[in-house]
Length: 238
Image 1 (cartoon, rainbow, N blue to C red):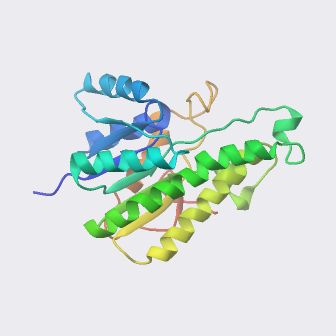
Image 2: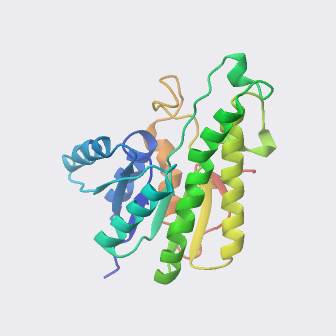
């Protein structure tokens, strides 16, 4: 009988993250629901329990190195390993004012704040879990990126968000290249424009569709890709 894989999903108390937890749990993984606000995380986990799923919740603020260390330690205490990491937690603080939408006007402090969550957080988590995955001989890392970070189709507006996601894609490529053809696979994905608190009510995609590719990448076979960027389970340009 195959071992149950252990997954850690960040920013998972709502939206795409919560849907990833739900889909991975239904696929038979033991998924740890990580949330910056532990009470919101527990409430989300309780809601899933009413559907027959039982993900444990842990507190995890991706901007706080101590919080990351404590969360990883807690997962290791509970399960002894981490097989899958989904870096889903992300922020979009920009609006449509000139100060926020123009790269010539955007506050460098906002760029730093956005990058700490969207890029540095995934870096810290990757550094924390890759040694665990190497010891276990298996790993899948999924970085929730965005078409807004595609250099091949880069536009104006939302400069802090765009730069943070382009940097997250670079982290994906660098990590995959360093690990090489190992048993750990590292990929980025774009969920598309999804109806969440971030995406808004006019978005064109459901959370179920938005989570689909992340779930696929989290469960790749040993012959699956690494170092790629995907939407709808198909490669897209960087």
